[in-house]
Image (cartoon, rainbow, N blue to C red; front, side, top):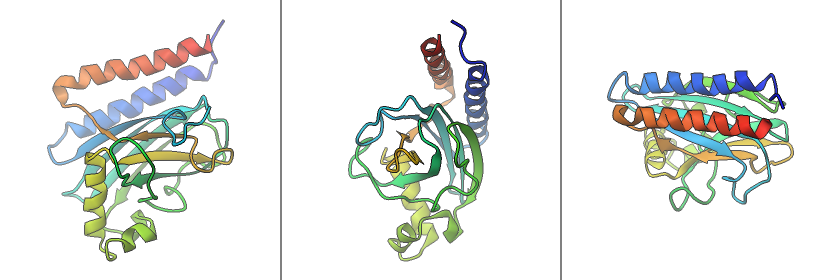
Length: 203
């Protein structure tokens, strides 16, 4: 059976976001890029959603910026919000409070089941953080930025997409560092595999 005509552009979007993020991550030594594969199975507790996605988050602590890029599709509910949560008690498991802007990333697609997003955050601005998260660091954006970057490095930060059907989160993924240039081919193979897996499911 032919797969959905809208699927090919979605896979292309995933690959484009990946390519842009990888290009940025190798341009200079200072920024550190993380990737997250988003799924319902990664939620806590897991949810039975066919939704999926990919996110790239680049921290540049020298420029004090955070670049966020997300592509997602096939959600069961309509998007209500998306954030980065940190820090969990243990790496790659558990839940944590919202660390970034509330009620959602500025300009993140809302009321949809698929979409793409890209935004560059100025981490010296209080608006880049949830007010309660910033208060936990005495109102210091420098300390909040350092803590968020450290949470990502420790595997204790995740990106979550919330929907009206799953207010606690429909798909999420923990941030993991993008490999060094010698391993980029392996990452690319993994991205292609993600697309192929979704394609097989739609046949």
